[in-house]
Image (cartoon, rainbow, N blue to C red; front, side):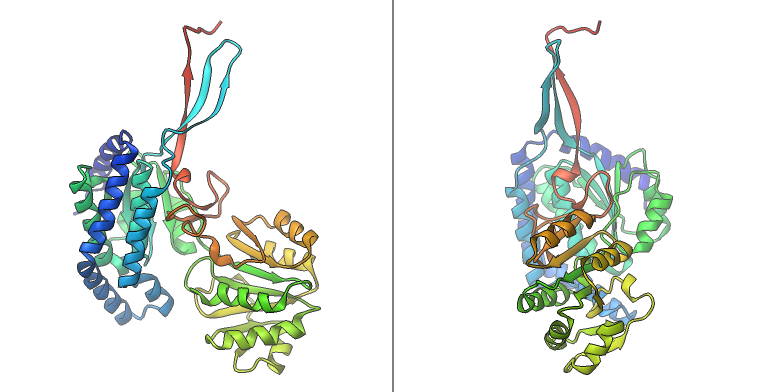
Length: 421
């Protein structure tokens, strides 16, 4: 039986030890994790293969299986990410916001770990390493609860992490995993507020709603991306095709992949056939409406084109499907995005500086791009190392949750005998 209280107590004890570590000690532990990952790659891949086989037998989608899959290349990338986190500046102990009061008392804010972080996620075993390394670097302990479809993979990865921590002289309880797939344990974790300081869900809308409604612990929500690109009338159309292809095709099963392309009416007759021909090479299905549907049906080459349904512009596809709509201009594009976006990642392709500025100012997503793919919303791409999640809420952090976002602060006052009058 899984004893959540015991896990919470162990995590809290470990977090107190982690908070006292030097940067060198934390970096040594991260490098030990990378070494152990490489040494135990065969064991981890064998366990992942069993999860993949079970997933196929249960009829999991190709997108979900892709998220679940570990390969030698992906494991090597995870080891490299752990070493990269070791090279990043340590935010813990940094002081900022300093001031001297009229009475001479010197005040500043000092970054400290949050404490214990609970993370609930689905079908992404790589998240296990991302979370562990970022939390260790910032002195946070963590309790992980992955999906049942990736249980063997997560257990193997946490065993790797704990072996490395033990070798580095750190408490293995700094990174724990709930090994029982019983869903009741999720509700239990959400109420473990005596020991857990923050909950981060990574999964679909249902998981985020569950955490918001049932948690007695602060929750950081996000990671659900209905992402848009608006092709303005001044856009470089050849470059726009490249960007749309990258945003949709490069890895369609992730939250920053493109879901809807909006095209200015003035360039739609020229742009849509070019886009369709390129995306057809990757088997992308286009779901179009109105005039976009008419243009594509007349000249889409080998692309599969169907009429968009009433809810198709509110879908995070996570697959090779793309919504297509023609808009009259920037105003209509902004209106559409504001109505349908989940405020994750949205982009404008334009050579009009005024349009670019308006788009950036009026689209309130966690990441807003000009002439770039939405696929950059990622901790590694932003130079943050790995990420715990991508937050689309406004408190306390937005976008990829990297090292700094896994800290809080305390006020430190230095005096020489001051008393309050």
